[in-house]
Length: 176
Image 1: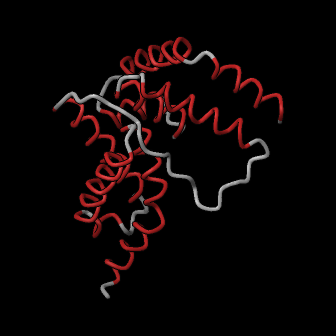
Image 2: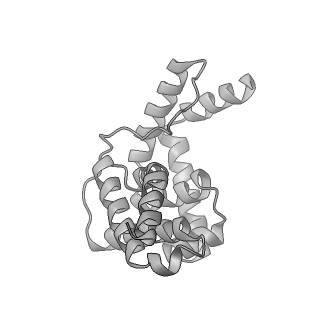
């Protein structure tokens, strides 16, 4: 087997679960997330010969995902629903209070479904992937001001549609 192909195959096998989690949070739908990751990986494959040595393959793939998602927003508006389950990391922790985590997950899923796709993407980049405002703006192809305003609007909407998230988070924080 070609060594470059073998390296790409290894990259896909190891990084796809993490890419799917991010894509799910961006799209709000398991099937759309899979499509987004597949499209991004196809583009990454085309550039693999120059990416494999640089060590930037995952960053490149994620950037492609964000750009594809933004272009999909601009193309069409579709009613969104979040019917799928968020992919879990392999070998995840066993939670002491499973019911609380399930409640938090369901509440968060419902709250995220009420946000616009842009607001959800900004929150994913800023808080799930821990990106700076300028990194998020660069990845989404928007200004830092847009990232700030969309973050503010999204957090305000989350506070309105799911005030119980603040209570659950406060409970989690005091338990540690």
